[in-house]
Image (cartoon, rainbow, N blue to C red; front, side, top):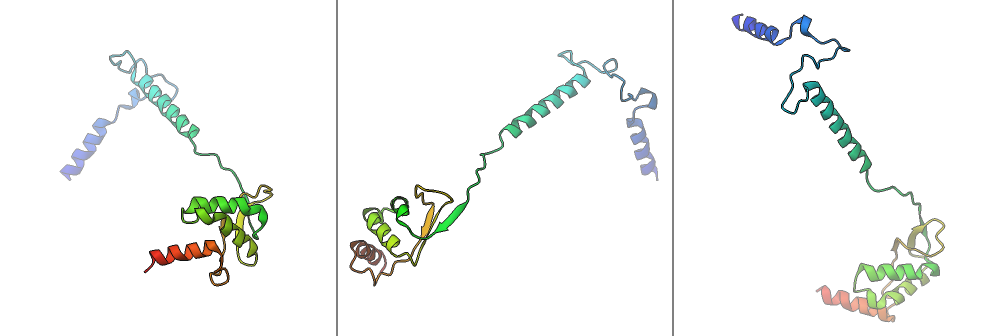
Length: 157
């Protein structure tokens, strides 16, 4: 009981008397202590608020990259995509580079299997991705298929 009474007394002593409480519209500058720079406690608080607001504004300016809406379409293989397919083959692996033209031609000829990812209304034939399957037995006479078979057999035991 004595401990509870002491805690209550400490809490009461820490509260300012009712007569010294500032009303919401009353200025505290007359009662506030001045620091070494001559600024009052209230003006320090306002400066901190301004700095906080400035830093928030800076964060909102650095939002991130702009978002561009793009609709992708999945198209059948077509000759308009030849250069796009060739470019992706060259970029994907140095193994395909010497045979990229021949591989692109084979994929375009094999219309029944394969798709190209492009953008809607693209007349330039830009390719963002592709999927295709080439039967190694069917195209075994092609130099590009023979070279890919050789690389695979050399790398795989």
